[in-house]
Image (cartoon, rainbow, N blue to C red; front, top):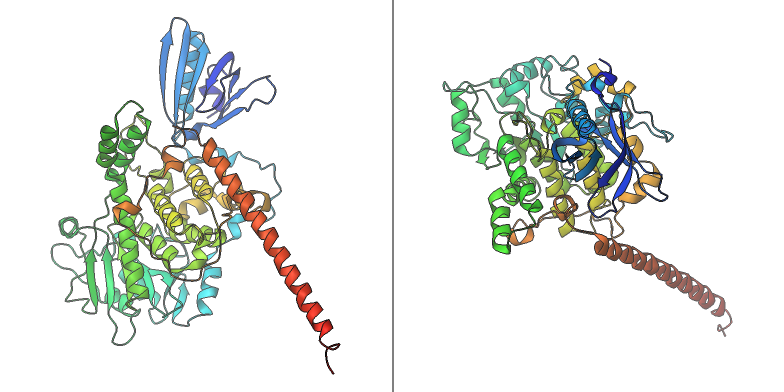
Length: 549
């Protein structure tokens, strides 16, 4: 298929662009296969380059011969295009709708994008499972790297290499996989260096109404326990939802078959509920007309903050079991690709200071989200404005980033990266020139040859001139476990995402720059103090021989 077939009117002059907190721009609108471009001949005027994949929905309005297109984006931005001529407006709108809803992954922009920067470090080669396993080997010899899934036949949503207990052979892994939803048998998620406890993740066991059991599965998770120790199974579903799953062939671990494990049920909502919550939250944030009572009521009705609280509470529970109780943990929900990953990754941010650095956080996203099989292509197909009926869309990754922001806000000196880093990841998960978030699992990315045909997001982010934009000026390395508060008073609305297009951030930006200036000035003064101390010490040593009788 040629993109030209979908572009009825490639260019229109005299188009007026309206954007939040920016001056109105008049210029020429051009449609390409992947972008809406508006350029003006005025000096110092920023052009608009908007990816079609960033468009969630559009609305058309007409006043006489003047047409207006309201473009609602997946990054929650809303822009307005005033187009002279009804036919031109209809053609532009029709083309945008067609180009923004293409299903073929291979037609997306990352396959056509050619970077203008030099790729110093290939992001596709970073954070490989072998590299993570070498780090693990330096701490313990109780695990091995299995190739049981090398052709993705045992578990389509797992990567080809998996870290499993050393004493469990591949035949046992295959039998355990047949007992878990989607073949997602328990694998290592995190090793706690402090006490040797581990966190594993999986999908629900297929016990069904008959109480089916699997000796290999029991042996697999028991292999993670030390002699005389108990473990915790954290099920991210309520007991009622887990019971209902048994009728559909799923279920949960029976105490009689897993006597060394205590099961705890939490209440993290499924994807369809989360999508509805996001829509309500964004609607509340965009409604400028209501009173304080109405705003607070709509905010509460969205239940977004409740979801944040529940996820953080569950992650804190997992971290507490590992660090304070000295127990290993297995986390799962139904499929093991959504709430499970939120909990395991947040628990690691709480426990492991390395995950609070930029490189460590990138590795965490690769390991616990991309390689672990979170279906980004499905979950991020729509955002809060789409008119289409939700299928598999859900803001699972955005909720995770929101939880990270809550911890970052409570521990502002413990993270190497700033809020801007999290916002950038949100934007690229929904629409990007890079191939990192394309596809739903490793097997798809291998088939699409993303590492050969597209550029990795990390290749761009890790360039020194880009990294500088995402560094936290308050960062002081903190090797301790950090325990965030999950009290309702401690959890705030993430304004950097949900209100950034609704009100100007000029004052906040100026305050931030002033803070950076003060920090730099403080460093200069500290260096001067250290230099003077060295000079004083040198003078004292030179004077001491003269004072000797």
